[in-house]
Length: 184
Image 1: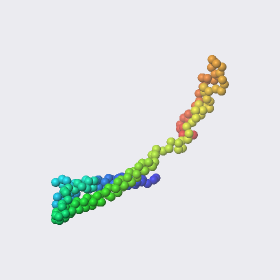
Image 2: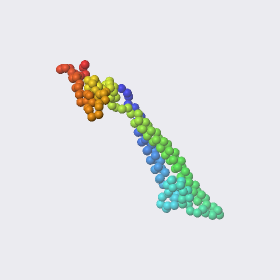
Image 3: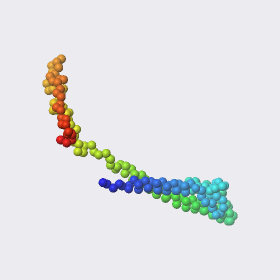
Image 4: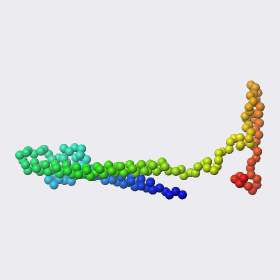
């Protein structure tokens, strides 16, 4: 008796783990960035910051407004700090979630491949039909060695060929009383 394989359970575990990791990663990319210490929000909105995906796709959307003049050093320093904090938050979020997303997708693919390999290699639970039974009997053996309705002579046109319709019944092969057909 063969021991059942744990491959389907491992494959299923990897698929679930990979899907969970992908969900966490996508959630991390789509949540709002933290507000910068300089004040305001990272993004064009007034209430909440934009998501990391939005900031990655369009870095100019941070919402810091126009760059202050070079003579206004305090405003320029605040503006630069705001831009730096928002861009750092975006970069940190992307660096944390994108590799996790890629690894999770890879784990999911490995799990699916393990499950597919297992289903392809599954042995047929039904026994083989030809084992120990042998070949089915040929028609000659069923009919007692004669072949009715077959002749080797050629009939004249309009005449019936010899031997047509003269089938001989096969001899009885039934077991005697009290015996089975398998006990011969």
